[in-house]
Image 1 (cartoon, rainbow, N blue to C red):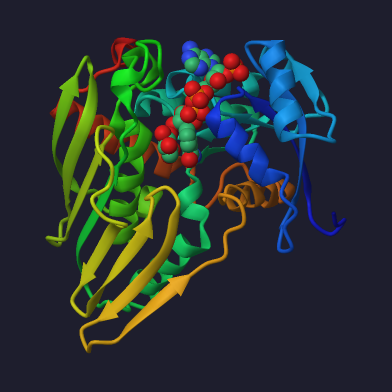
Image 2 (image 1 turned 60 degrees about the vertical axis):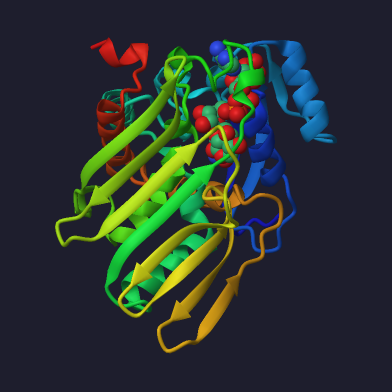
Amino acid sequence: MSNSIPTLRWGIIATGLISSWFVDDLVLNRKDAKANHIIQAIGSSSIDKARAFAEKHLSGQNPAIYGNYDEVYADSNVDIIYIGTPHALHKKNCLDAIGAGKHVLCEKAFTLNAREARVVFEAAKKRGVFIMEAMWTRFYPLTRTVISLIHEQRAIGDIQRVFCDFAMDQKIASLGPESRLKDPALGAGSLLDIGIYSLTWGLLGSDSGIGAEAQTPQIAAKQTIQDGFDVATSAILLYPNGRQAIVSSSNLVDPKSNIICTIQGSNGHIDIAGFPSAPEYFTLYLKDGSSKKYEFERPGRGFYWEADAVALDIAAGRVQNQIMPWAETVRVLELLDEIRRQGGAKFPQDEVV
Ligand SMILES: NC(=O)C1=CN([C@@H]2O[C@H](COP(=O)(O)OP(=O)(O)OC[C@H]3O[C@@H](n4cnc5c(N)ncnc54)[C@H](OP(=O)(O)O)[C@@H]3O)[C@@H](O)[C@H]2O)C=CC1
Ligand SMILES: O=C1OC[C@@H](O)[C@H](O)[C@H]1O
């Protein structure tokens, strides 16, 4: 622990898979940490679950344990709320946290649609608190390096095409109808769960602009809908200059290759390997026949990069982050809305105005 870097005290909402990954990463001892992270409180639908979570993931620490979320929002020792509930609950959880005057880091997909996100950002703006969608992949040094290489250094020349696929057999046939991966009222479907990463790479690979500075591509999309949610989605993003990004997701099958994303330009291409959410390495191939593999150290899973960025923003008094600003979250959700409009996946909440 160092005093020269900011300290952020987290209240964790929900004790599911992502909360465990996030907390495990935040308590890692890192030599290059940009902030100190303290897990101050755990909130769960059940106090037993909260206690078990703390015992398993925070041994030797002493977080406050609550059998509900409201007491976490109200805890005066908590600076920021981390929201790890299913997508459909994000809007309410964010609004409740903001209402209590807390900063927020909310898992992806930030909300079910762009309309819900605008409501949340409006509330954060009025209350003057920091809020960000936890699109952790954008904070990876690997991702920042790819963006710099293709857009600033123009290493592969003019970008012509981007491909990204996130396929993962999530064994959905074996899950109950109450699973967040199957219940449309919880935001089920491959698109918001994993297709959001393919779309993210399609956008980052195609255009250096984000948020209000980004170009708007036309969309052509198809979805395979089973039992009311999409099990596969494919979309083409067509940019004004003719550039195309082809992005897809499936929660029925595993990836066909370790290369999950390819960015092709007039002077070469980049192959990115791993998962689109957690890329492991990439290789730059140039038309002169040369190539270079880029590898990155990643203790744990890599959630601390976004957490450090949030801590630095809050310490500096900022309410949004420049890598994942509010306008970018809304833009991504608008594109997801359009893909669903064309593809047919609907959530009951889409109708609520
Ligand atoms: N960034 C990333 O890599 C990942 C992000 N995610 C995102 O995190 C969110 C949660 O996903 P994940 O952790 O896999 O989900 P889980 O089902 O594992 O956990 C969700 C938790 O939310 C709470 N919850 C509250 N209401 C409900 C409800 N009606 N149904 C189910 N759970 C409920 C429960 O915690 P409790 O009972 O303790 O309150 C539950 O354990 C999603 O938005 C997902 O997109 C997920 C995985 C990876
Ligand atoms: O964000 C995610 O990435 C990894 C997947 O296991 C998970 O379902 C998804 O929410």
